Length: 362
Image 1: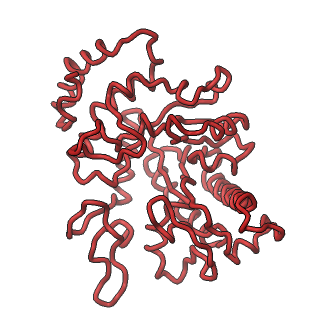
Image 2: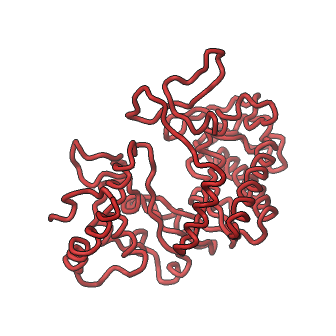
């Protein structure tokens, strides 16, 4: 956290050692970031318990790992990447080195240390660590394919021609499955009976595993083969459709509206009218494998607490309505809108929530 929790354009100390990671879009020349202490997290767990909320941490591997790779890059006791790896890739965020190497044993040694420490915090809060999310999303094509460490693993097929796209995908999938088996095994060792979560990209790696669940962030216009394959394997699905449940999307198409519009424009009414079981044309049989829905707020463009409130409310109220109740067969938006205006928005305003003004005027 000394390095990984700080974002700044002033990345290096005078002696040349790393002090911070690159900042987010829109940051100025101040230092940004921070982290909560162990005691603060224990207090958070206790507070959540009082309000019947379960806190599920996400510990994202093997992709999205730039912070941990950079933070531990100068620590001699941790080798998270293969120094002989000549693989070339670029992530969706533009990184060329944000994936840990699944063939390096230090990654699993580190994962166990982290999970054991997290477990002590749940113990201190007198709560079971019954679930944890391991990410697994957006591992870019090309990662690991030319890594000697990966080629020494028992899952590697020496007959693979990684220049062939189909065989490269097969190799990547085998390595993802290797990682899945190790990381879930460590979690089970640390907290027996724990349920593990992943994003949908990891679902094929966990084929046949019933104690995991998978968040699908695919947009509404995405190919549904991934969803069908996941459900055909009998796996559990959490609907996290980016076209309706990503709260960092803009409310509307306007130059002054904050957010990243890659998945669309998401307002409160569109979320209210969202049918989770219809977004990928799920059958009645498939719907029994849906555990629920989950809204996401990614923080690349969240620069202040007020902006966090703006992104979240009143949209989160529509998310809650759709999580608990099926979409009505008749248009009930006018009644829901009126309930928000007369009851819910005044209530959250008294709590100090800076929700988006004028969202419900139309």
